[in-house]
Image (cartoon, rainbow, N blue to C red; front, side, top):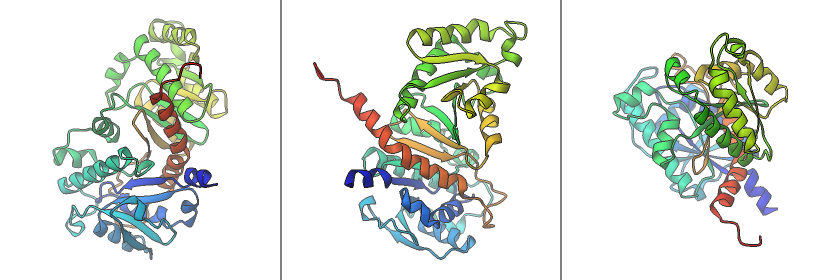
Length: 351
């Protein structure tokens, strides 16, 4: 019974994000829902003044309980457990504006959450929005969460997986121009990603995953009529993956492959560039589209929307995406941890 309880109620660290945006508000609103505590023990890593301001904006009557260590949290409805870094004066941060101070504080919230994950004191992290311009203004060179988490954990090229309902989408490239993304569609890179995607899905509890590769060109290139990347790069990569006993098919035209996967034909799709997969998932359900970072020493989930500066301070933001991110982090953390432990433990002779 105790083991099941631990699995159902993992501690999920939630960095507060850029406090000039809607991050603190969606944290407050998500944690105001008692149902969240049936699936996770949420722990906020941030700044008390910013969280109090968010509670006022959202008109919520919740207590803030400051803790020094995750073991001190009560994790019960009506109370927000907070690791308070006290690293920024929230009253000096205006809503809806790019500010270096907010960027620096957001970075420090993430850094602390990563340290807690790596020490094993929390089970996973669910991130709220940061602002790339505020990061740059603060002198932080990382372009986004994934790149920052990769650097902090010394993880080369972490995988990005989007999940919305039953649709899962990996990305061959992320924050590069479309011209550069096309240059990254090579048979070696696609083969490498298919191998990594298969391992990632196994770590999330799918023992023999079925993968589809999206086409790059209209109609999948029509055998070279509209571009030859499918014939020259994708088909050889998929054939090589199948020779390694990876259940991969394609390339399948991008105007149909995501629909097929949503309806159960595949466990996941490898999208070839950022917008190809983003558009497909967000058109299914924008609020429930969750980003998952795989390859780190812990599972990380995230809302897939920005700081929404135009909504900040109005109390009208929707917390559904964060609720879903916390739910998925709690659901996947035990399986992911088990997979990492198995990978780190060499099989014994005769086992």
